[in-house]
Amino acid sequence: MRFILGSGSPRRKELLALLGITPDAILPPDIDEDPKKAELPRPYCMRLAREKALAVAAGPDDLVLTADTTVALGRRILGKPRDAGEAAEFLLALGGRRHQVITAVAVKRGDRIWARDSVSAVKMKRLSDVELNAYLACGEWQGKAGGYAIQGMAGAFIPWLSGSFTGIVGLPLAETAALLQAADYPLWRQE
Image 1: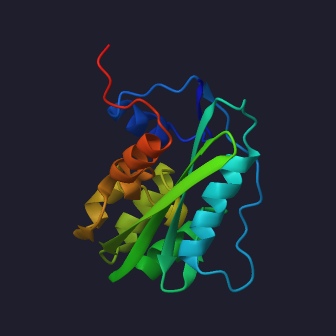
Image 2: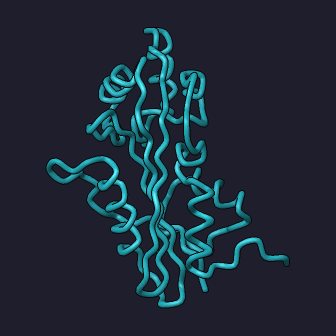
Image 3: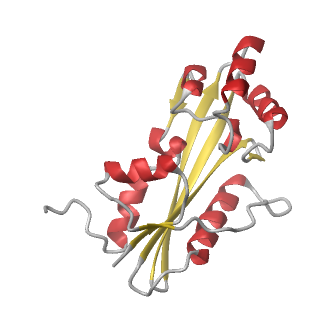
C-alpha cells in the first residue's frame, strides 16, 4: 500500500511526520475550489476534502489523504486571498472578532472514503497599521485561508483559541489518526 498525500502543503507533510508518516507520493489535485452559491463554510470544506480525494489518481490498495482548510466569519468563507489587498481586507474583517477555522480531512482507500472535520474558534486582535503592513510585506499570508498562518508571525495576533491547533495549521492530528485507523492504516507500529 502506498500512502499518497493529496496536498502540496508543507505544513500537512510536517504534521503527518508527527504521526510517523512519510508519504510515498505527494500528488496535489487540481480542482475548482470556488464555493457554490449560498454554500455554508462547513459543508463547503467537507465537499472540497472529498472532491480532492476523488481527484487523486491512486491504485486500489493505495491510501489517499486530502484536506481542506477554510476560515469562516459567520457564513462568509474567507479562502486564500488573491492579492495583498484582499489579504488586508480579510485581516481587517477578522480583527477584534472571533471566527472559525474549519479543516476537513478525507481518507480514500479503494472505493471507500472516510471524512471528518475539525472546527476551532479563534480570536484575532485588531491589527495596527504597522502590524498589518509588516504582515502583508512578509508574504506569509500567501496561499493561506483567511490570509494568515497561525504557526508563523500571525501567531502574535491570536490571543485566544478553542479547538485544535493542528487543525488551524491545516491537519487536525486527532481526527486524522482516527480516520487512518478506520481505513486500517497501521499507525503506532513498532519497527
